[in-house]
Length: 471
Ligand code: BES
Ligand code: MN
Image 1 (cartoon, rainbow, N blue to C red):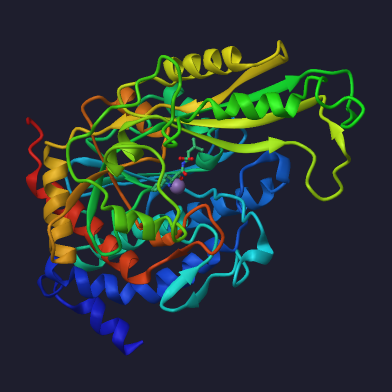
Image 2: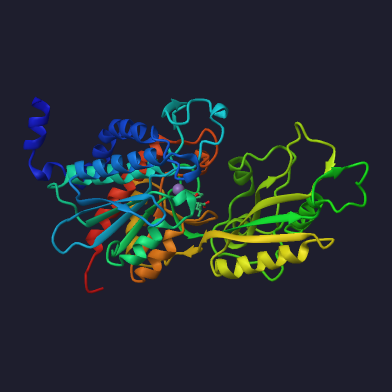
């Protein structure tokens, strides 16, 4: 009680921006507590899983946290895909620029709860990291935003150096575009001078990084049919058209002998200026087994960030256990295509569909169905927001900020670019490679969370200082 009294009576000048590191540090126990609360919601926005109430509860948790931070006009937005995004805003000092902070509160499925070393929805500390589904992607980034805002308000006169808008999406991991559609229908809502996409991470742990590009993504479903029903593999095998063999042949045409993605009509030799991903580090990050080669050709950075990449995500076939000795009448696969900047997902998907249809052997019936996706993104990195971010990260980490690409996708980025062509978009976050996002045993490094929160606080302060509304 006494301590609280003393602090509230400290003259404003004693808590200056130079105290931001101390403020962020003192907020870390709270960040951990709140991250644990947020991770406890299994907010997987796949309607098939029946977790809608958990998703809504996570959204309400975020709304409450924003209200507690003094944000006004805090609202749960019902978006067209049936999920809730959370919005709030906070007015800063007069004449300040407006910065939009983005993250998402939905998560990937835990996949196999038994494969986790600790329960996926219980934030658990091990070897100095905090484990749990969404601990990094993206609930850790929600705590990054909250901690940065708290630190700024504690160290100043309570007002922020910028006007802040916060938007926390409810279905990013589904690619169903609820928030994209909502934003397009309410074009004023997310308008800002600069946008912080808190849904990526540093190139390596402790190496401050701005992500300057993302690949897009598109998916197709391939269904092959060849017979009226399965047949005895001895009585008919050798002449009966095997749907599974046909599907395997089709899928095999999507890579060459080096494993490079090969889709007729799609270039696969693009290059991106800037840093490469050192092969040894990539092997370690990707946890490649000894003696196994990487696939593709050329610089790793180009393979990951500048070129298309096909991945077969799933195949519907009989499982090994319990399989009968029969020739398959049908088989299907889900195929994902990552699409680099400079290519639209429509162009890429057209090429993939045509390629697969042409690759169907023996006259089998092959139906390729187009699924949802999101466009690639490439940031403009020469403006004042990038300069402010570089200085902020340097101050927080003590080393120069790097710029890299990223092979994953965040579909909203392109929508924001279309809606607000003048807004600078920066991508940062706590999702460095050792987080193993989307995998079992996802985790976040608390030191990274602390430094990224501090980086964001410095960024908002620096950006406000550099702001001149006429520029
Ligand atoms: N946070 C990821 C994007 C990302 C990937 C950041 C890798 C850093 C490293 C994001 O949540 C994500 O996974 N997005 C989906 C989007 C898709 C469902 C449209 C993706 O890339 O698969
Ligand atoms: Mn994410």
